[in-house]
Length: 393
Ligand SMILES: Cc1ncc(COP(=O)(O)O)c(C=O)c1O
Image (cartoon, rainbow, N blue to C red; front, side, top):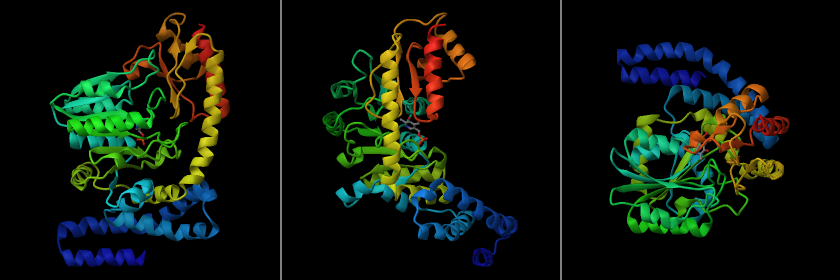
């Protein structure tokens, strides 16, 4: 603590500007108490949540580490892109020697950053629909001309790469896909991914792959898309497979240093830097990636099987069985009693169950997105029973 305060004081003397000295002195008074009080609770929370994954030696270092992290984050803009990004994309590091990566808020932030950095008003974007809302809304807010690739239930929500080829125009700057997909949980295979990479390279457009669910796949995980071409950008985060959405840490992977410079400049404008405390926790999680994933994947498969059983026995619903992710997108075979609005109201009011109605995804409300990973096992059972009851009026 003393050291931190000394450095701050020296900086003040060195700069010698009243405007900086005054706020800094105020901050110093506040931080003098804050830092001491903050490090301990942080270490405690981190130990409770992640302690089981840490060795005793690591646990005993935690208090000391936390005090350091708290002090650094309070006294300067931290740039810690290296460690988290390297861990997140360590496979990339093994495959290619020069890989530039950036820690960028979280998945939603990373996607927004890519869109705002690469797209301008009037640029064309080719994007899959339905989709995670941000992947459509950010380009809309920018004023892009959007060409949709609409996935259909009858085609098993499959994405045919040749439709992307047909949709690309001279003004297209970016093709955007999500895989495994939200809200359907479907996935393309490696051959399709390779083909989309090839098409976009041939047509000279960038490819954004939202890989937030990549580590939650029933089929062997696809390669990190960014390893397949310099024009490809992958985004992902700790939110889903690692079960740590509150940490708000995600990353962008791309192998073209010139493009990464653009992302870095965009990040500077949007957030300057990430929270060093969050990145510190993220580093801890990613350094034990296997332990986290093994536990998550076992429970995830069990739940997906349970949903499959339930849909199989629910004569009022159809679905396309997901290949990954933590959501699925069932379809009602007919309008429920009183219509879809009445169904969603009953479901929430009478059964305390909330699902994502189809219109969130620009689809009819006879579709709904069901997320099955977050609730407890009991809550999930209650929710499934609630849906069956609400469908019947
Ligand atoms: C496909 C997809 N991308 C991005 C996100 C945002 O994730 P994060 O919490 O990391 O911002 C989500 C969250 O639901 C998602 O489903």
